[in-house]
Image (cartoon, rainbow, N blue to C red):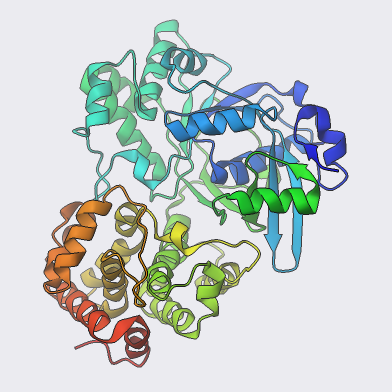
Length: 493
């Protein structure tokens, strides 16, 4: 007999899953979080759930918020189960479910007055976000783009904003007008120096309507940088059914993730923060070394295997790592062109870190998919791959492997796998990338015209040469043989 998840059915859920050790009624909100997706509920919310289970800091519960139609859909799903979430943690030898309850509400989407009022609540001391790499209105160089139509619209209508950053600006303005100290703004997205990126977006948005207030934000609001890590695939009907069949719990949108998680955070919270160090968060004065390690080695590794796997009709990440060619390609790329340019990380062996990454990528239970890794490449390539390319070029080193990654991405955007199967794109820039990839079959340089993606790398003669040769080889010989040529040291010309 299955139970439909709710506060009223927690005792039934406890037969197969861990449930909160705290009374949800004891919680009081201290955080507004934008973007209540899978990663947030498998990461930040889990750390808070652990803290609450330990009997600490019950005045730091979460209120969700969002601006997209998907946020409204998530609100409906979670509201129907009292904002509870079942998180299924999976390792090679273990699968366990837990019901988490650190979220007490989600604000209505499309009602800026309601969201601004909550942001102005003095009990809210942190505003956090997971809005994906593409949600920050930045270009390949990491600069905020104030000319984006959505940002321009918020600049023209600051009292009725529609973006996350416009809402944050309005919330800070309301607090200042009421004499309430500003909240801390904390990004939880996979972006180098995500705090700096967020500050640029918030201040840049404010600049359009009130330059004086923008200066006030710059002087008074804290934006700590943080590094977050936990592999969290998308939820489908498969995951919903698995939970029901194996744990007798009906959850409208459960979250599946690996056991491993990591959070490294700069301790810059003038309005206070939950004692997250009690549950495994590492607080440091500078997150930069950890960021470089994770974004270059893990996220860069994901980007590297996504496109050869897609071209070889491989669906799951663990299956791609079980392919000898792809796994060897990743290892050679990491050990020769990525790890050597990652700065040292305190008390960390980068070689051991990569071994851990390989183990995580090989986890069959997580069922992470190649389409998830391949999505949004126009935002991910400039953040996860091309910085390593540029660092190698600046140091006078070769980029045979990294140029091959970019060529594989171009070949992917032609729209057909090596076997002729259609590839379904999930990228805001899909149309222009596909058009350029078709042209690049005959003229590889046609794919390097996007300054917002390739930036300085496209100006390098060596990179253009390596990219062009790799792409031509992919078309002439196919993905498998091209990977083998790279492994044999015969791809460079």
